[in-house]
Length: 191
Image (cartoon, one colour):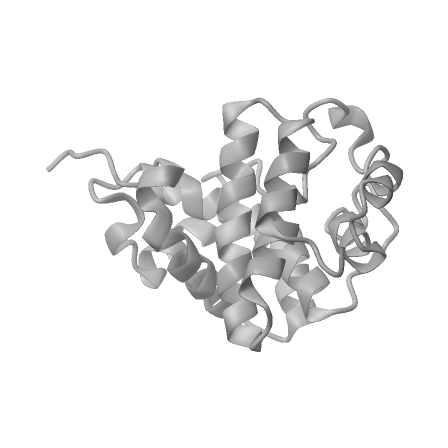
């Protein structure tokens, strides 16, 4: 295959991931990556596919994340540069593959960022539908909110991209918003 497609990423994920939360996370990252691709004038479906597949081995090997990714994906015909992009999202955590391209840097930045966006949207009556950047940035600065999401990594990823966190967050929200229902981010329905 010339480059990873959504159909192939979906098929490969289905062989390794069954947990609803991990699939939701993969979709959040997928849609955020689509928006990043648009921003950089790149192939949207390709970037979305890489985002969807980024945690391929996490469910089965959480303690050895990305150690069971490279060879199986190469054997499945995933192009080496797409595998490299997936490996780069674990840079400094569980991989020594440094993000170099805009695809790699974007994946590195949005992986954790989408977690905070998801947490923020889930608390709101209208979910992500009317989530404003200002509200998000307030939560981002509150280290106790979505405390498991590593802000230093997000900041490092945005720095690699040469973009402020607010700009990357706005792109992620924009990418995730049209898929609110599928992502469970339509809101609490409370008034």
